[in-house]
Length: 291
Image 1 (cartoon, rainbow, N blue to C red):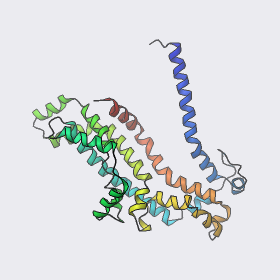
Image 2 (image 1 turned 90 degrees about the vertical axis):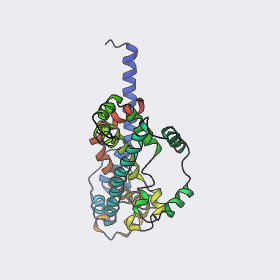
Image 3 (image 1 turned 135 degrees about the vertical axis):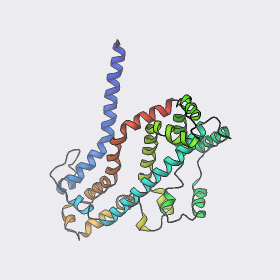
Image 4 (image 1 turned 45 degrees about the horizontal axis):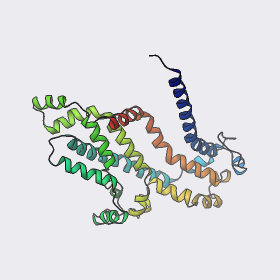
């Protein structure tokens, strides 16, 4: 194909713009990594930008030996894994039912999904519902109420609607039930959108802290983000650093401890993303265009 000069200029400008945006988004993470690895004298003099100066692993030595961080990490992994499984099960089953033309009340339910998409539940009724179900101070309070969201249902329903109807007709002629069509045809053909919705929900569950502040009372059940908030935002690490009762704290500043804790809470979800990136891009594209 012949590429015109204007199109070539557009692609070049678009590529340069995306590189600049990517660098701007990566800059804070690179800066945090540099602070966490630098020697404390350079951090105190505010001379660390995007490259570490010296090498100091005392902050990581202290962070990795904190039992409450690991406990909160396991809590977060649990609610992320269980929440994503429940979300995919509920979202895919509801989206499949809404994508089938012969589902009774399909039009009314679709309208209800759109209404809840525009008008979300206020905080006080949401809190009262969770409390009435007896979920206070339970990890299920962080899993069940957010397992089904209108946005994910719409995306997955649109994807399911784009699957060829001839496949469903052929399966019906061969004697396959609706459940069989759902498990044997729809789900295997929808790995891209399932990975996309799974990533959306997993990132949401990993970063959640407001619901934990409302519903969780025991500090042993605090997710990682709640602990991160108390350590970084409430400046608890500054007082820990000043106490100096740990040998690793002698060569560590509060800024380095904060940087190490932030990376401790961020890296696991960042490591998972490259493994499902190709499914995420394909699922997001098809889910938004088909139907």
